[in-house]
Amino acid sequence: MSERANRLPAGLTGLSARLLVLTVGFVMLSEVLIFAPSIARFRQDWLQDRIAAAHLATLALEATPDNMVSEELKAELLAHADALAIVIAKPGEVRRVLAPDMPPMEDAVYDLRAATFPGLIVDAFMTLGNARPRILRVIDWSPKETQVAVEVLLEELPLRMAMIDWAWRILALSLIISFLTATLVYLTLQWLMVRPLRRLTENMIEFRDAPEDANAMFVPTERRDELGVAQRELADMERAVRAALRQKARLAALGGAVAKINHDLRNILATARLVSDRLAGSSDPQVQRVAPTLLGSIDRAVSLCEHTLGYAREDLPPPHRTRFALAGLVEEVGQVVSILTGGKAVWETAVAPDLVIAADREQLFRVLVNLGRNAAEAGAQAVRIAARAGADGAVAIEVGDDGPGIPGKAVKRLFQPFAGSAKPGGSGLGLAIAHELVRAHGGELALARSAPGDTAFRIVLPQTLRRAAGAAAE
Image 1 (cartoon, rainbow, N blue to C red):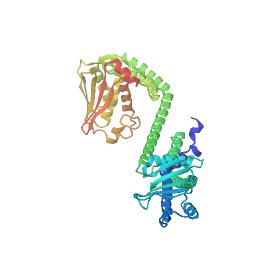
Image 2 (image 1 turned 135 degrees about the horizontal axis):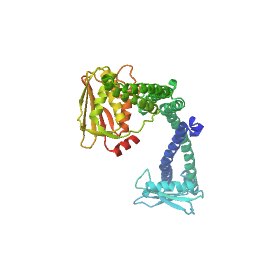
Image 3 (image 1 turned 180 degrees about the vertical axis):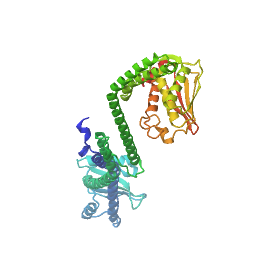
Image 4 (image 1 turned 135 degrees about the vertical axis):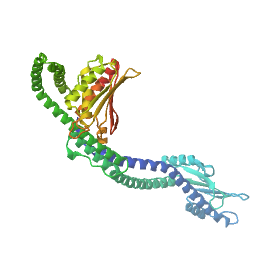
């Protein structure tokens, strides 16, 4: 893994800085969207103020009998109204004009009476973007008398300068609002999200570098939101991974120990094999009766010794399938379980003599011995084995007993080595081995039921090689 992955991002690449920049950007974008209608409204209000001032300026004409004033007063009235010329049209009256003898020609005409909202926005941006001085003729109803139409001839430059000045003030205000908002959002997200996320990330890095270090255990908070759930899930995951690593370490130590004693154990068993061969040649009827069982047990012990190291290395031998009568194997298993447990439990068989299955006989022998021995050592008085062939061709074997049942805590991890033992001090290897051997056949070993006086394991073995090979590959 690269060194870069071990470091949390800093600067603008960090989540905090990105949140700050994005917040400022989004607030500014919102201000831009608000600016367009605002600047149009500002331009409309400015023009309507000129309309109102123009109407007031023409009231001086009503005080004269001929609606005429001196040139000096006319110029002063137009200057106060910021207008070049004013025309008042009132129903039933003569148009009043306040204008010099030669007013300038207009460059554009804007009738605010028929203006639309999109049109006002377009006109506002045209004013901002037009640096060339223009003369405008603006028409609108008087705000003082709604029946009076006022036409004003005025210069656009003062309007443009007022709009630019207003835009700069809005820009400064927008920047202040954006940075204040961004700071508040940044601090809030830093407290609610970024700091907890950095804590999660830092712990993940520490756990990756030293997964077996108990000091790297993540301590979740009492938060009830999504981050609180993530914290608790991370803590649970780390505990589960750490427990699995400890279990793997114990299995690895077991494999190392088995590798060391495997050679010596095979030599001891070889010596026992030589002695048992001599016993087989004895003419004593009692010896002749027990010699085959003894020889078979020693052969199985040698085979088990050869395969134990492979199991510790997670390299179980593939099953070697043959066809054989299940009843004979069950009878042999009963004899071995009785010897191993000192006759603690009665072995009851309910297997049809003509039931023939395809399986690895030695591996199935190990599975049944493990199940029967566990039942007897758990306190069962009787162990029952029944089998039947299903409609799909699979064979179901049930190993039941009248023992005290399996504790609830053991049921959850029943087939895990060093974790699924149902008896105090047990390693759980017997059930783990049996489970893997059955899965290698493409079958399934499961707890059918568990209650005081009635506990049973069910083995389902498919009889087609395709299904078995596919399951073994998994």
